[in-house]
Image 1: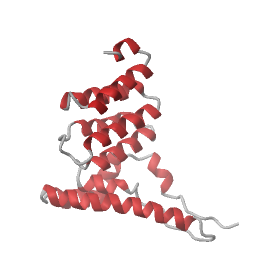
Image 2: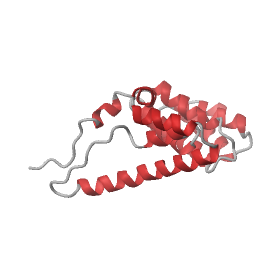
Image 3: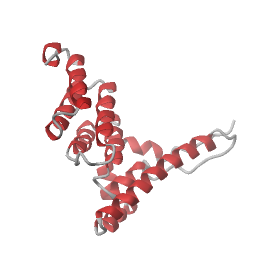
Length: 183
C-alpha cells in the first residue's frame, strides 16, 4: 500500500498558531516586512492573490492526493497565513485564520482575529457576509456567547444591519435567552 500524502509538518499546524509562525518563520516574517512598506492597495491585491492561490493549491492538492503513489510536500504553514502576513487587515484571511486558530484550540487568538473583522470599514468588500460567516462558524463550534459578542460588536459599527440583528437574535436564542432575543 502506498502512502498518498506526507504529514510531517502538517501536524505542527495545530501546535503553532499564526502569531508564532509570524515571529519565528523567516518566510512569513519577510512577507510582513516587505509588504508593510507598500501602499494599502498593493498590499490588498497581493493578499487577495495569496489567499486565492491558497484555495487553488488546496483543491489541487486534494486532487493529486487521490492519485495512487502521488505525494505532495507538506506546506510550511497553513496556506492562508501568507495572505494575513501580507495584509493584516485582509478580511477573508482574518476570517479563515481566526477560525483556524479557534478550531485548533487557540480560542482567544481566534476571537481576537474574528473581532478585528468588526473593526473593518463597512465598505470592506463582502464585510457583512464575512462577519455573518464568522458568526455561523462560532455557532457551529458551540460558542453562542462568542457569537453574541461578535454580532454585538458588528452592530456597534452598523446598527441597522438586518443580518447582524438576526444573527444576534439567533445567538441569544441558542444561549437560552429568548426573552432578550424578542426585542
